[in-house]
Image (cartoon, rainbow, N blue to C red):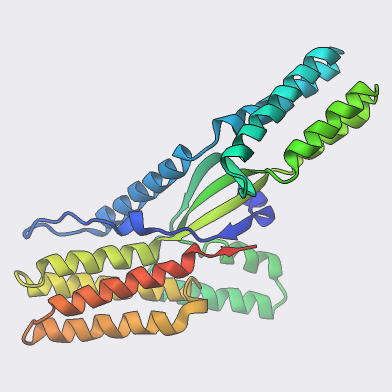
Length: 296
């Protein structure tokens, strides 16, 4: 699976669902395992939401394309033409409903890759990678570097509405002209034009926000637990930094870290922290908006 990721364009989807709620009783401790489990569960909900938006008509059009290729191989030309015409009709329905839609999702899957390591271990691994690169051992460095991921990837397969229907129509024209092999080449080209996007959800950022929310719920009743959660949130943000997830947003990242430190001081003191928590969580929400952007 990872081998084909090089071909994917990468986008960052809104991960608000991942941090929308943290249910925590006053005497309950949010363990690292529970944070991880919650992040994965919520990511699956995100995938399910995308799944609900899949176009059945577009899915059937792709299935019809495969079916037409089989029929052409069997010499059933008339049946193949009928199936392809039905495929074009289904895509025209999609276009009629969404005239400006460039791509329509037809499949979604998820891949989770988590890293069971803290900042010190990650820093040591990065030093090993650099040493290997300095020694010219690129392949060993690559293998090590590939372990430095902590994310859930939602893989979305999409059909290009701008080209797919026209390609099918041209294939039908070729069939009518008796150019069966040319038509089959076009149909295979249409199937090859399907694109895949990967929605990358960085788990350390998700966990940090979840821990801040948990801290906000116990700050008035259990200062020590609130501080513990904030310490863990800081650690997760550090992991996110080391893994490169915040490289393009260092200013906002540093602001989050500073606000967490300020919160800890406030909780240890007069503990007028409600407003500070509100502002910090608002900053997290704004920070996540960066990850909605699509990177081709």
